[in-house]
Length: 370
Image (cartoon, rainbow, N blue to C red; front, side):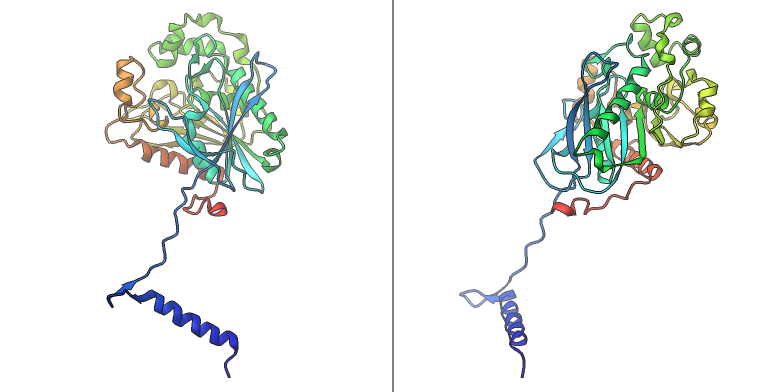
């Protein structure tokens, strides 16, 4: 005799079969299907915090992107008339465990949210990404006279690291053996400084005498900078020994690095170059530029093309290029022929993730809260 559980299973199967091929009042059969599972967009968590830094007279704005374990409200971070924002879950709980941490430094005139396209993807691959707005060189507050103070920028990142390590929510999640720094353009110079690179004033003066038409030198000239009297603090040793590796994308000022400091930088360095058909001399680390890639003991150089220096910035809105032209601003939304900014971004993300040993992103990145 069949058990009651077996009979119940058979009866249930008959009912399900009948429901799947039911009849209407008119006798016509209709198929009844199970609704497809609702797709949940994979998003990183995002939050902001203030950084108290002894070298600054003001609080330094900071932010953190991280792998989220819950869903809160999603908003576009860094959205403005020029750039499309990156959606994130503001204030969501973070996934547990230990995570690598990446300090992020924006370029001259940029800001921490403008690189959200990168921070978000690295966070979804398991990293905590901590970024700052560097006073004096950020959006709406970018001065040629304050730009040579790379020491202050590097100290911003160290202060941000101090703050997040002490934070009761995020501090316990940090794998202290995997703390990296990533920077773009002037941010690339900043993370090199943080890793022990020493910039010499006389070498930068000589570089600008030789390449006066380069964008960095032109920018300083517009601010009335006297290259014979650059701030002495530019040469300060601001190395943070907690940093185990760095990624420098199109770093500037590398002609001014001292030979001794380059030889002493034994941590792994990934250099990423853009630019087509030819890179800007100011950010060229290959043999045709400062040759930094060959001079560093443990550096790798990845060139991603076709792209320009500005291709690293966020995705632009359709009307952005025309708006920038009308404002006589830099053509930050104009890419070389044949270039696709989203594709270049994807290649950068994969290169960085591979170098830092991050997880491969998957469609189920947010499975924990679906």
